[in-house]
Length: 445
Image (cartoon, rainbow, N blue to C red; front, side, top):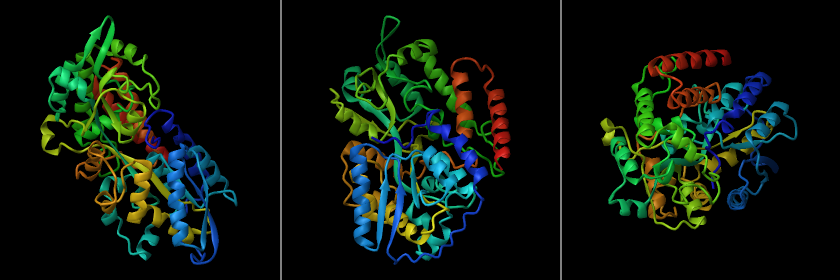
């Protein structure tokens, strides 16, 4: 199970804490350090994983690092949330971590801008590592901000389409849809009404549906969130209006907002065995690569298919792309062992064998270009879909921003109100939301 990219209000609540972090930090993220990376030392490494299999996988990777760097011992601390990380980085001192791994890519802009994480440019140059040759562009987009590479990717998440092959066969559907217009037809064909609800819903389109957030949808229209001057592009890039218009239309075609929301309220926990896709309550699901293992663990009674999400009808040549996110890793600016810390970060994020081993252990997509093509990578055909999405040149992400991802919350709030019919004029709503984003970001600078 992966918890790293839950784009919910709870996941983005760390934005407020990040604002406090910016006020508390000095703003310096100079990479200089006096420590000798060959001297005997102990690093403190905080990460957010908590599931036993995940903890085991990361500890095994750390042991491999220690075997290759026998002078460095690593104290690993699990289940550390961004709130705990932020508090420790503000306080500093001997209890603060040297190396941090965070699930929230939305925190990167603030980590970089506040100086909480060290700019890794000097370390990369000394190690003769060109990040553009190691990582695909979307991963660099969510690990750097305004030229500051204050973090590196540590595994990757790719979002795609899961579908119930048995339901497809029963409905006479021979292949997953490639365009959104095809998707609407398939979703309607798979939908089986029952009373004032559904026996089976082809797809839950509302933004409150699991992983059907505005940012995950709009990736398939290849949006540009900010223009060259750093201003919000919501009202200027037609991708946003096109996506929201399509999604609202899909809601109407599948029964209407109220009926769908009533049905959604019968769903079990997203991270448990009672997930609606597991139970056949929905025939298609937008989700990340981790759903495959979770569905199999839940003992689903049907054959699972995976495919890229559909694309806009005028972008069919780009079919195969998807939304990317992942875990990030950086060095705390308060650390007095930055050179030794870099050895750990470099190993876990750029060493192909280490990345592949961790990917195999945790069942997430590798983050380096070499690891994605490694013969040692273990996956079945269904998982390969997400490998291919990660490698697709048109896959994209939500860029790092100084507001710690608050711009996504503002966009999502508009999406909630529009799908519910509370915003009638989409153009005006996008313009107002863009202005609000610009104002909020200006206050952070």
